[in-house]
Image (tube, rainbow, N blue to C red):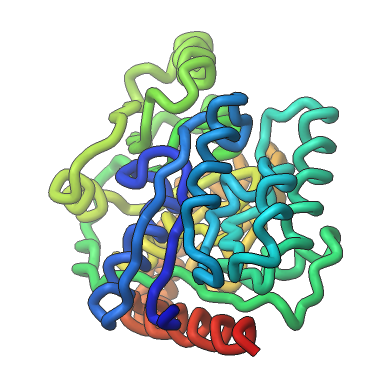
Length: 354
């Protein structure tokens, strides 16, 4: 089989507006532009907690693939089906795409996290090569006994974006772009903001349907903290509306508990917006020391202090904005990331064929 054929196995809705799916879509389109024949195989959306039917369908999908096919399996499914990939490990050239370890997802019961870690460990042992989206995830896979020599980092890219205007009024306009799930830490942000002077507004862009329980709890929290009038939960918006929100914002905030990379942070920096976020994933490397303030994950007091400083010290916000504008020019672009992905796939295919 030609090394420029790729079978890409992805669970759920490829059009979903999350960082992992955006990455997958951009890579598929970019590889096709480079001449690769990419065939997408969609698995059930119940992954990473698949039903029996979802596992049976995944087995059918892999069974139908021709011998020695180059197969890239998204980690959202891979880690939950170790026995299936082990059955096909000798027949297929299996590669993994890991955005972040499944067990790192917030809100899991301890026994769930342990089961996922053990399952993903077994699945990764069956892979010929592993692709990750950050050095942080590469380091995390050391705990899964994955030889670093079998891991390649292919970071997401960014698109060229217009610089957010430096408008300043009496109200600090903050933007958060993240699906409303426990991992993204909206609850921490609301608690941090509650006692601060009310000279701010926050718009939260992200799906309100992926975790209905989280959204309900956040709405209750906003009512309890009496922040309904200052925080807007806008749901998903189209690209035109999102560009408008970036243009209106003074500050990007993401109090995430864990990230494999931090694509939303990179997008904010591409618009020249300073960032308040957490020291997780690739965010420290993206933001550096000039473009934002980073705090420990889960630390509401530190988050509140960082927000208070930006609210009360206009010169700090000005300095961080200049830093973000400088960082903006150093971000990886999608054509570079896609070309790197193509090289990694080609090299992995050549090596597997030997």
